[in-house]
Image 1: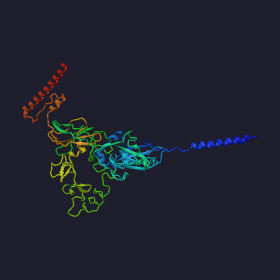
Image 2: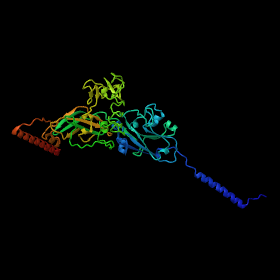
Image 3: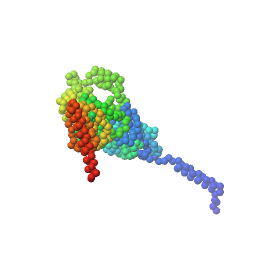
Length: 501
């Protein structure tokens, strides 16, 4: 007969089995969650603009994201700062590569062969390295172009210049060496906390055509300038004025020049010389940083930039300075049709008349360029520099085709330039010579306009010196009264005709 186990032994076995099960459950519950690949939601990205010294300034607004980066800011080397923070937890700690640009996935997958060059590399490391947030500065050129050669942002050279392109760019991320090599990116330029679903817009393309076919009508202390719109400039126009000596005028138009960090509002144009007159932005803005005071940055004090202290910029044999391949400082040190490019005399490749092209006499350069030392150069002074000090009008709407400039002095000749610009502030300026002298019209023209142009579209008048003497004054007064009577009669007649209708 089979004996059963004692009851207390059975209880002990059950207890042991239960304890084993509980331990298994506990061990199962304490197992860490499986790590997963990172996604764009695991990161927080903010963009900031920088000031003249390259320091981080304010956070980019939604308007900045669409219209801040223009051609002048690019030429002034006004960098952008990105702050990237990892805020995930259970993600793979594989190598994380962070790039800036556009079409980074395609460029990376194709190894830079084809339409897109590889994007600039901001950082490479694990996600946890970004846990407390790291900041990376980059040139706005990298939003539009990839790099030539080395990808690391510290030594990266852009594969393009500040012209001809517009689009969007931003931060791109990929995880794992194989994934990055295959162009498998989980963040593609549009992820950020400044504006949802879009990257940073860049616009290095000025309006295509300047206004042309100008007509000028002189008035009393004013001038009416009209033009033909060849292409709508997207944002609007400003008029620039200079007196007969080429100096800016004061006609009581209030204009405050924008700064490097001013919010772009589509009401002004930007040039490199207006935005950064002391050279490219950065720690040494406004000086060369070497402390010798000569402005060439080589520290020897002779101003030639070569650092040897002899004041001679050339490294060619005596008698051959200024020839092709020799060192130079400016166009004055190169012979014939050579131009000083990056400190070396080189042949000029351009279209005749353009800035930088060879010329032999005045009139061979496209206006307003001038022939100086056999090279077409942009004016170094005067209204055609487009300096903001010449602004003499309020912002004019994009569909404007005329502007009246007031506050002028009768009998004096003035010069005018019309500047068209887009929302980012890229510009194109008129090249035609626009001059006029306001005249004393005794208010006749203005009265005509105030009464709804009662004189008709064909109205014109010839302004001459007033007759002298009492009779002349009387005739002038009678003429004025007669004109005002005709104007009033025409006004009444038009009103009566409208009532009959």
